[in-house]
Amino acid sequence: MYESCGCGVPGDIIIARPGTKAPVNPGTIKIEPLYKHPHDHHPHSHDQVHGHTINVEEGILTRNNLTAQRNRGWLEAKSILTLNLISSPGSGKTSLLEKTITDMKGEIPVFIIEGDQQTMNDANRIDAVGAPVVQINTGNGCHPDADMVFRAFKELEPSEKSVLMIENVGNLVCPSLFDLGESKRVAIICVTEGEDKPIKHPTMFESSDICCLILLISSP
Amino acid sequence: MHEVAIAPGILEIAERYTAEAKASFVPEIVLDIGTVSGVVVDALEFALESVCKGTIIEKAKIITNEIPATGPCLFCGEEFNVEAVFAQCPACEEYNINIIQGKELKVRSLVVE
Picture 1 (cartoon, rainbow over the protein chains, first blue to last red):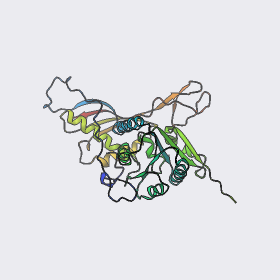
Picture 2: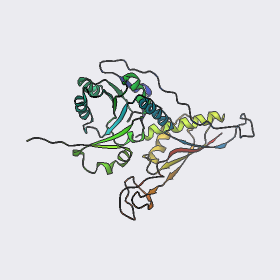
Picture 3: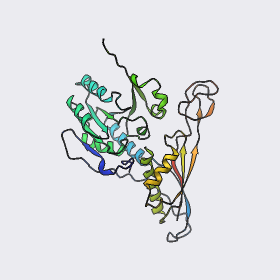
Picture 4: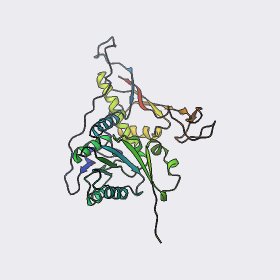
């Protein structure tokens, strides 16, 4: 359900490895509600139709949050450090990943989930530097959700004692509300975006555990 | 924009409780939305209108309780109402509040028929 943002339909979402054309869809998780409304306190039969108030007290994002916690448990059990990388479009997330993967080669296995509305471009870039990668295309959606990430890491099969980095779509607003099951949320800003970025997008920075600042040094 | 992704969550909750109560229509939904929850109430109401056409909540009256954000200052302990996540403490002028209320995003109650 959270797959659609705007006019998106579930069929818009593509989860695929570089070089593959067929969308991979191992099915979504069925999450049972934690709480079922008890009805035994009603002194009447349910066949009787009338208006009555039900105290719900249920979080609107509960389904996503339960899926995210399920992801987190699975990843923690396999000792996988999962980072959810969020920034504005074009701040340098993919470049930072390319450099990190190259520098960490031989030290610890790194797995990548790429999130973008369209194209396999970022997955191809990561593939070129030699890390296993799965691309999520959110179609018309403005953010990946916990279920898409579940489907992506089922396809990716990250190994134990590894690092899984989820490159979120470039957007500092929508992804802030959607827990994906990450160990740490990392907000990335580049100096060219201006020093007031955190106060312009406070929800994202407030919900992040780590902030990474990218400096650009141009040689003369 | 993400309000459009949140609206189906409200519909899913309403459909589940309505089915459990063996009812078929939802005339009223009461929502608790915190002022720093990241959701714009007007945008959410607009999203509900468009996403929920032809469903059991199409004609529901949406009542939104906006929950003000408050919390203690982590430096001096002063508790105050805030309008934004990065708020200045009126007592010690530091910027480090522990928001304990105002991030709510939930369905408080439903009327089913």
